[in-house]
Length: 103
Image: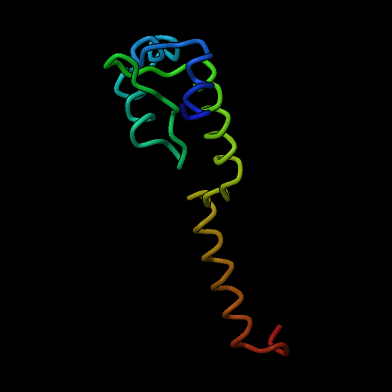
């Protein structure tokens, strides 16, 4: 047996519907996390007797890894900064064209 699967079998088993209730989200959200992932991280699941399960511990690991990838991403520009940045660039261009003696 795969060591990862063996570890999951030893944890607190949850159906994906139970996991959704626990997280206060729609079951499709949990299915999406399991099948497609979020921020490059997928929820660990396994199939036992024809039903798909996850574990409480796997949910914790998923949240931890997803949040870790979020904090490693560079922050996106604030839309309010863009106009000011453009004005500053334009002012610098005008200054460069006028030369240092024009000030």
